[in-house]
Image 1 (cartoon, rainbow, N blue to C red):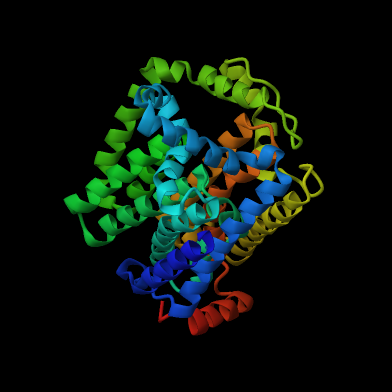
Image 2 (image 1 turned 90 degrees about the vertical axis):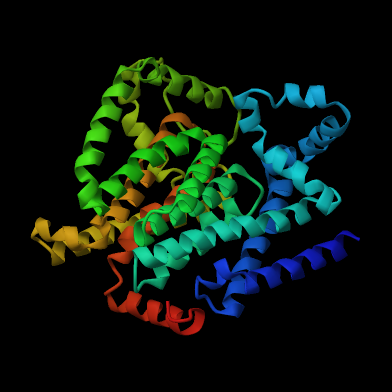
Length: 413
C-alpha cells in the first residue's frame, strides 16, 4: 500500500512541477525540471537511508519522525499535554519539524519516505524561487543560478525534513518577493508576503532572521539611491537604539548560553572550541578559531565520518573558486575603483556575501561539531559561491558551461 501511495503522490507532484506557473516561469525545460525534482527527492531518500545506517540513534531525521507519533496522539487525545509542550516560543520553535510530520503523517499513513516526498515539493518551490531571483540578479549565467539547486550540500541537507530545508525554502520565497518589489515596484501583496516569510524565518531560526536584516539593509541601500538618506537615518537610529537596549548588553551572555548547549553534547566529530564566559573579551578572543571552524571545517580527513570527506572537497572547491575569482579580478582590474562594476560588489552581491560570512561566523562561534557545522553552514554556501562564480563567467571554460546549460536545460534564460 505504501509503495502505491508513494507512486501516486510522485506522479501527482511531477504533474504539478510541469504545470505550475510559478515553476514554469523559471524557463527550465520540462525534462530537466522533472530531473531536478527527482534528484531532490532521491537525495532525500538517500539522506534518510544514510541517517538510519550511519547516524547515532539514526539521527535527528528519524527522531523527529518518531516523536511526531507521540505529538499526534497528544493533539487528538490529550490536547492539554500537547499544549504544554508547544505553548511557549522556544518549544514551539524547537518542535517545528515535528509539527510538519504531524501534518504529513495522515497523508502518508505514517511513512517517513512518503513524508519526505510530500515535503520535497514546497522546498523545491523555494529553491525555484531562489533560482529565479539569482537568474535575474546574475544575468547571462545559468551556472550560477543552477548552483542554488544542485550544490551538493544544498541537495543533501535540504532534501530531508529538517530545519535547513524549511529555512532555505523560506529564504528563497523572501528574497524572491523582495526582488520583485525592487524590480516591479511596491505592492501591498508582496510586502505582506515578505513580512510573513520573514516572521516564519524568525520562528524556524531566529539567528538567521537577525543576520538577514543588515544584509537586506545593505542590498536596499545600494540599489535605491533615492532612499539612501532615509535608509541611513533609519540605520543610525536603529543602531543607536540597539546599542542602548539591555538585550545588546547581554548579547555575549546569550551567545555563550547557546554555545554551552552545544558544548555539553556528545559527538564523534568534535572540533576544538574554547568556551565563552559571557563577556565581550572572550567573544573576541575565540574569533580566530571560530573563523577556522565556521569557514573551513571539516578539513580533509577530519570529522570522523567518510561522508565528511565529500563536504570537505566541496568546501575546498568553493574557497578555491573564491580565491581564484579574487585573483582574477585583481589581475584584470588593478584599479580598485573599477571593481564596483563587477557583480561581486553589486548591491545583491553584497547581500549574499554579508549574509554568508555572518552566518558562517556565528556557526563557528557556537558549534563544536564538524557534522553540525556542515549542516548549519549548508544554506550559506550558495550565497558565498555565486557572486564569485558569476565574476568568472567571461572565462572560456565558464562560457562553454553556460552555453551548454542554455542549450540543453533552459528556454532562453
